[in-house]
Length: 152
Image 1 (cartoon, helix red, strand yellow):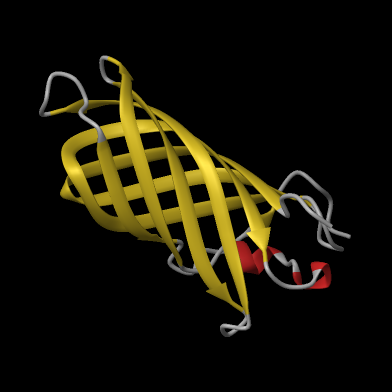
Image 2 (cartoon, rainbow, N blue to C red):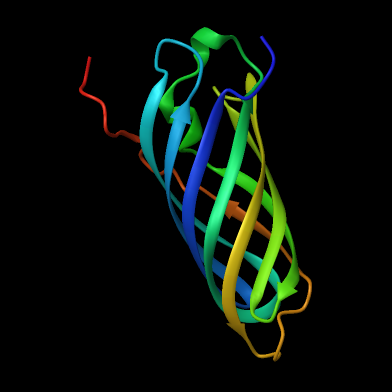
């Protein structure tokens, strides 16, 4: 009854210059419901960032759905989301941080939340990546496709 409804593990790339563009390719594991299993998930995002940089990294997030377990379907993870990130430098050119997102799904009847962690490496106009934060709109109606499991 409690706990995450899905877990996402992804590789991300981002180019930022005040504006931010990101691409993330992930594996999504739905943990509950009749559609439990592994799926591929592609995210693209655009937003604002408090740094000028190019980076790549890993993100791990847990998703929580506000509706009934029977309503957990792959398509709810592939729509538009609002996402916020906060990162700090842990080593020169390496940062770690937290991320959270929100999506209104099923025509506003339910919500989808995510909370996660990121680790990234990159190049910045600054010698050492300063603390940074971003706010972006992700998803853009991406298709979620079933991966690694036979259709059934």
